[in-house]
Length: 278
Image (cartoon, rainbow, N blue to C red; front, side):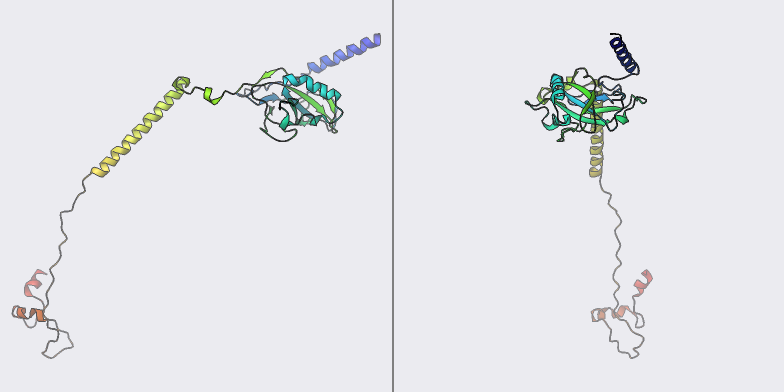
């Protein structure tokens, strides 16, 4: 009897020491000031630092994510299954009507989450892989469901070594159908109305300035230059000589101006009046 009492006391003391060191027995939401810790299909959890304070070389930490209604189903399958528990409920079909409504995804090595390090800025996003097709991918959760999470310690052979408690119930918000969302003026914030008004007024002013500039450019009369280009009268040359012709015959006489020969001297080739003008 005394031996059993001592064993019980030692067990209680070990549990008290474990909890006193800040051990996490269940997954919790991230403590960071995220605006979207819980969305319609994702959840941001704290990373599992010091969840499992036991030597286990090569062991990995996995996360069970599923509907809270499937907690008992998972626990029963783990205790009764003799196969690799990682393939109990593959993700692509995990939330089908006839499925187990949970899936398992890898978080990391146990050695990556020691107890001597406990950063508050580290987090794990459940559903980060989106709609994926891997057996253990980190897929999204059912929209608007109530989900729970649990950490598992798995050895290199895929056998369960230890596990944490289930988290509390986390309710995911449900997406509203598009036709039920009212987007009228009363649904808009005051800041949005002010910004929209300012932008509309600025656009109207720019359009008005453009129209004014266009009217000024198109309606402005063009200035005509009153000066006309003066064209010099053509100089009529009745006859011209070349220096190599010495006879009295002028083969280059222009017969069209034979009547004007009396107005010119025999030695000049340009009109006197024209010469004065030039």
